[in-house]
Amino acid sequence: QTFRQDELCGLLHAFVRAKESDSPIFEEAIELLLPKASTLDQQSVSNIIWVLATAAHQRDSLVPGTRELFDALLDCMLDLRVRVDSEGAAMVIWAFWRVGRFLDAWTLYVRTLSDGRHPEHGKTGFTKRHAVDGRQRYYQTLLMETERRGDIQKQVFLWKQMAADFYARSLRAACLNCAVMALMNAGDMEGAKELLRQLV
Image (cartoon, rainbow, N blue to C red; front, side, top):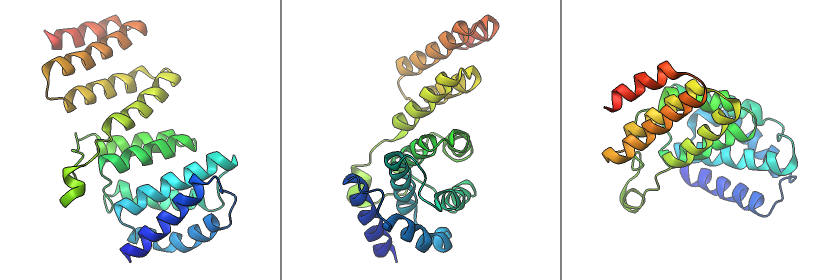
């Protein structure tokens, strides 16, 4: 079953790379996957979500059935039946943002990812030794959108979470300084002072 999942994901990935997103293969894949959504492994979940978001971007509309499949896969991630690693999380968060579901991306981050998850999570052997740290990529997506929305509360939350992820004191301080600047730019001087007191 895992091999077939990987094979299907690879085929869909090849189609989006070739910019053949109008192919009926995407609708057929959704019809096949929707009743099996709860059985997909974490790599297949992140790959399928990324592929369908990319296809939607290329064709300027969602592939029919995408919303329903995304809903089913999001449920699997939120109740932790599927725990994506940090690399997969970067793909999923970008994909939900790309199709206009930022709040779902944020909910997924807050409820399942804001735990300083190490990029090796869920990997073994060679892939574990060469794990890609996706945290900075999903932080980039989330920060970009929260800044665009002018959501200071979420921006500060993200900077604090980034600070918690770093071992180096200098990097932690840099993130918290960014949080302070965000508060000051928003005119929240009391919040900025409180955060500065935490830095001293």
